[in-house]
Image (cartoon, rainbow, N blue to C red; front, top):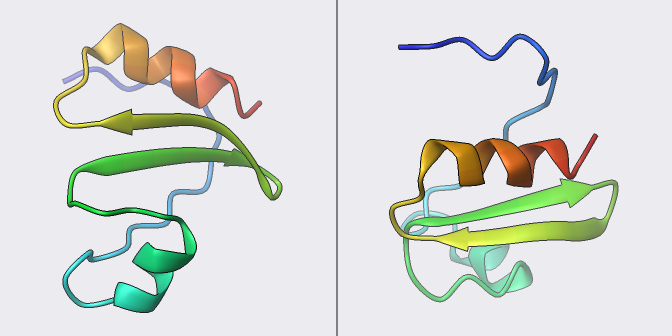
Length: 63
């Protein structure tokens, strides 16, 4: 496992099945979604299995 120390971010995990209100607010229709925000602006949306470099790039877009 690799630690990416350059990405100092806040991570909010929402249980799709338990918190339908939040899921609807972010227009998440199925589990396995990752939404990257900078403030209230959506910077990236990834679904399903994602390659590590694509995930890092999406997270960096919020910095």
